[in-house]
Length: 151
Ligand code: RB5
Image 1 (cartoon, protein in one colour):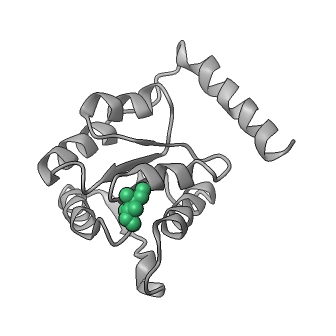
Image 2: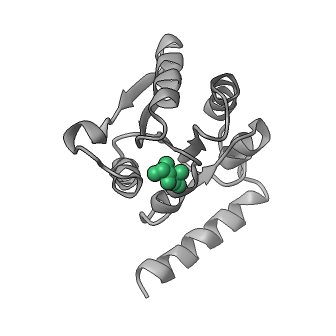
């Protein structure tokens, strides 16, 4: 599984913590580091860049971090075929994969501490879409998404 990660200026510390954590577990993780190419980059363009990488199939999943996780989720969900949710607890992170089949998890450095963030990411990593009763719901979301992007 290939994972990418990025953050805005409000989440530099948490990005490093999670990147190092996943790297130490042998996970194939890439820091997109959008801000390195554009000084003063703001969360919409950073999150958009990450979501476009997911849309292009360059990575299976993404971790997008800002102060709250909210802005990163909002912008990722504006990219067709990309689904994101804010998770600051383990149960939500598991459901994001198992029920919602989302590829992007977002978090806020101003909301949670590094140890909880690592635990959440570990649970998210081993969670996969379970189908079953969730399939029709996810399919309906994709149908409605088509209407929105291609009215
Ligand atoms: C800071 O720019 C803050 O607005 C941002 O990191 C994020 O929390 C937005 O949702």
